[in-house]
Image (cartoon, rainbow, N blue to C red; front, top):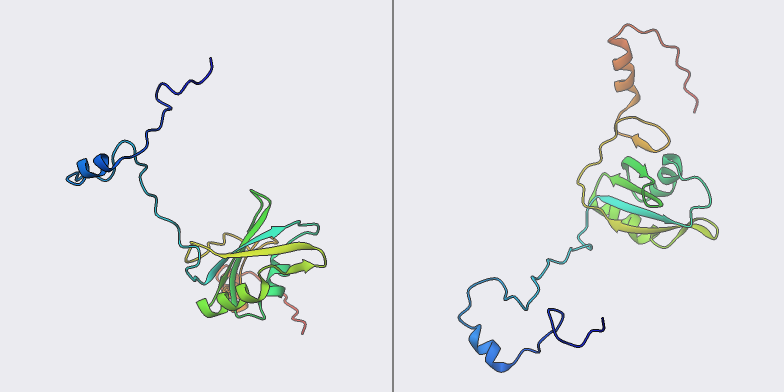
Length: 163
């Protein structure tokens, strides 16, 4: 069945009389208008950044991201997720550190010719890290807090610190 212009798919052009008739209208929109969606303000600075790694030819770990981010400021937490490619969120100690990291690293390659970074400000205010491993790390958990945790259970530890 060919479309001939009749039926619900026909879009009528708005006329001056339509505008005059709607001046007293108190609703949000008429049936011929689409509701306006609020545009997300992606440029609003936040201390949490969303990293999208384009062409990830090598493994991306929290160590890799921490290494490239620490020059911009103190990194508090990192979470890597691989739902749609490789992405990560990095939480900095301040908005200024995050802005500096975004300005410095956006568009850069982690490795020559690959692992290109696309960086945006993220929505979350704080990242939740359930365990420290290669894909998530909480740098605010200090060694003394960790030792206190073990001592509360009277666990004996032998720790060798290398500098």
